[in-house]
Length: 213
Image (tube, rainbow, N blue to C red; front, side, top):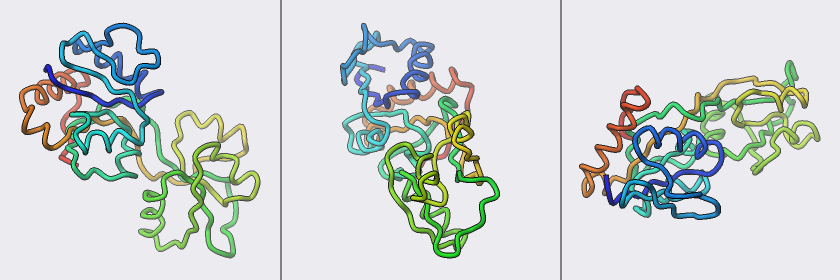
């Protein structure tokens, strides 16, 4: 499996990825700390620690041979140049429309705050709903509270923050989990190593393969 770079996003996905990789014999060689490129206990295999939204870009352009990213990121940014062979079943949550329960629809165009502009645009277009999208990068729940938006589109895990602010999940868009993605060129040039990585992870998770993205 030598000669592979695996891009992993910071935060929850990294926290849940490390035990999974440890089960197939890949572990960081020492503390990660602030390092961005991390050697592992498998010679030639490195982890690249980056922002979640950058994982598809690093893999598509070949800066990483493989990556682990949430399905929300893949849906938002597209899968061009990527294979998506495996659902790892970690970092599970739901992508939802959220807002005030039983709130009447606005008389004018619906205003939706989200960081998922592409997903949200497709979602409402498929339903024939005209929506004005407002891009935010955090604290989504605040937007309905101050009248910036009628609702939000965001990831929901426990829903505790929504409830604490009088909001609730209203419409389900997609179930989200983390996926293994692979660079198309690496799939050919490093086929034995990539196939072993996929096979080991499939055995560790007990999951079947997805169709290529």
